[in-house]
Amino acid sequence: TFGQKLGYLQFNVAAALKAPKPKNTLAERILSESEVLTMIALTPKTRDKVLLTLLYASAGRVSEICGLTWRDCQPSGDSGQVTLYGKGGETRAVKLSKATWQALQAIRKDAGPDAPVFASQMGGALVPSRVWQIVRQAAQRAGIDGNVSPHWFRHSHASHALERGASVALVRDTLGHSSLAVTSRYTHAKPDQSSALHLAV
Image 1 (cartoon, rainbow, N blue to C red):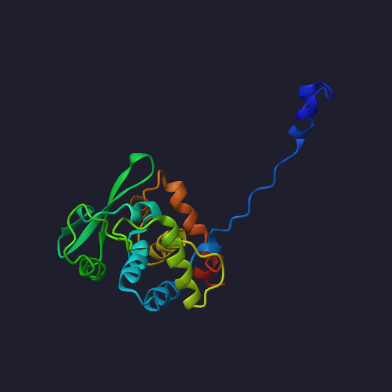
Image 2: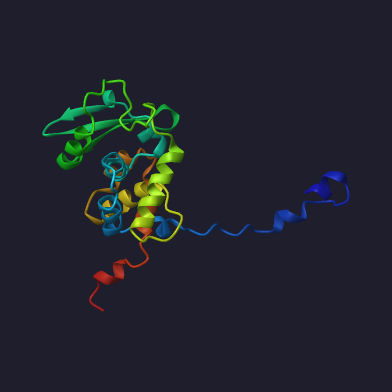
């Protein structure tokens, strides 16, 4: 402590104190499936509708989505995939559903391979602050309280995919987590779910 450094105290009195554990608020930042779909459905602008869809479908971070170019979007089977460039130079390809891929392709028009997927009115890439604005407005239209951010779509993707039977390993790879332990947080994020509900008592 400061007093110890100046010589007023012989030892660090704060060392015996235990810092309180931070509250786990992850569950509060997970939207329900109907909330996500309502936010998308009530968004009037096609570009923004596709933006929200891709935030949820790809579980991409806002910086990854803003940095997407059409070169990063490639056909794969009967749909396609996006390549996301994440933290620390980590790259991952995320396969999209046919419906999401078609919605994405519909906004391309005549854009070249190096053009941003989500362009601003000036033609450059959308900036994260604008994406936050779009998400907040969508939440307000859907009547959702709270400081909803683009990252909530990532949390919601992980939680919903696990609920629908995706493995923790698959969700980890899609989100680009460094370990299963990070992804496993989402299995503990639903306070209304418990193994006790599967018992006969």
